[in-house]
Image (cartoon, rainbow, N blue to C red; front, side):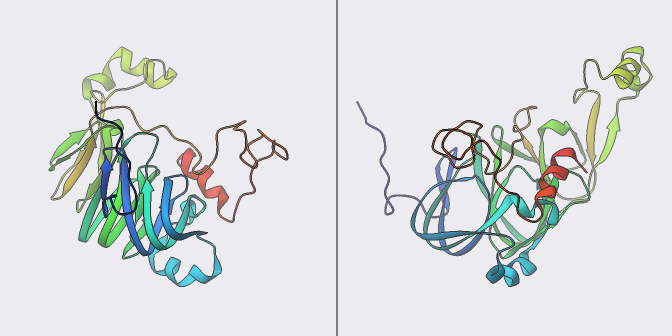
Length: 257
């Protein structure tokens, strides 16, 4: 009977997956990292908020999304850093002088050689340049070429192609059931009734399920967790952690403003 695989700094992969749910960054310098996605690390690594003074030059060059600033930190140092997100599939991708727009909650980390910008589409951010980034998805990711219409819930992002348009099924719009749903919200909608319409050259990234990754505050411990300061589970608990400047951005993002 085979036992569990036990890793150390020498057996962990370098900038590759440990398994489908965990990615190992071989850090030698700096990476941008979404809060709550680092599960362990070896070496000498520090984590600083986006508003940290000594990082102003790096942030000015690579991070241009004030709505998401409170959700991100800079990991710097030398060592191996393990990233994961609630047992969702995790993969790395390489951009070569390209641009990719992705759901903000799916993006876990990226190299500073890439520049992150705030998308005009609520809930998405755009990466520009050349470098590596790590993203999570609810199931394996598939790559398809436009022209294509996709279920909005299955959409992870798109690269090197124009932003999508909304497409609604005509029979759904004119039907009694469609009108009732639009007025009351009863029954919701599905990808058969409403899609994102992509045209032109490029690549669209789809996850293999119509269930989005569950939204939650990045870096926030579950309520009442014992031994975690500010979680309400121990002495001095019961209150929320103070928000850094830009904390309203997380609320605006989750509301789609």
